[in-house]
Amino acid sequence: MAWLLIIISVVLVWVASLCKTRQASFSPSKTVFLNNGEALQKRNVLLVIAHPDDESMFFSPTINFLNSRGHNLHLLCMSTGNADGMGNIRKEELYQASAILKVPLQQVKILDHPDFQDGFGKVWNHALLAKIIEEEVIAHAIDTIITFDDYGVSGHCNHIDVHRGLWSVQTYYASIVDQLISGCPSYLPCVTQVKICIACLTRILVKAF
Image (cartoon, rainbow, N blue to C red; front, side, top):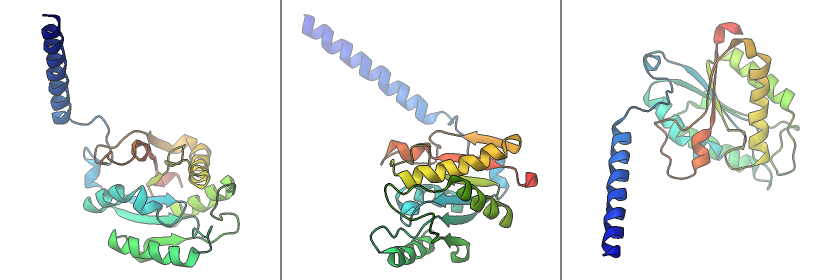
């Protein structure tokens, strides 16, 4: 008799869990990203990455979403990814990936700066990162910036430095920061790494620049 009660309890828990899951799937997401009327306003978005391939490994769902909504995307890559002496090859691969992801090549910028060389143990200059990002924001009237979370998604030190450089921009312009969104956007399929879903999304008011 005891085993029957156990089975019934397990079934009841399973049914309750299933109902909760189904209810959540039909409920509107609490996370809003360029929606609720904002989707009608086309944004100038800057995606800041550390190395070629970051756009494909971590941000391709985001890029596809932005393109599907007609937003104007600029891509800033802070290095050629030359840790293994393959910087030129990886640079071309980024251009090819951008073409596939429908990012206009004239809106893809890849830096090869001595202070931003690929590699573990390479510390990137946060102040210089902030300055370069600020210049891009001004040059292209950027109102949305997307980059890594504070863990760098994968824990790579260069990814983390990009996040901290962007954070320096936000801190400097703290009085004009409109909103900081952290969490898993509803459009981002969380099927590969959970950390991908907590990329830092920072929106800055253009008029403040």
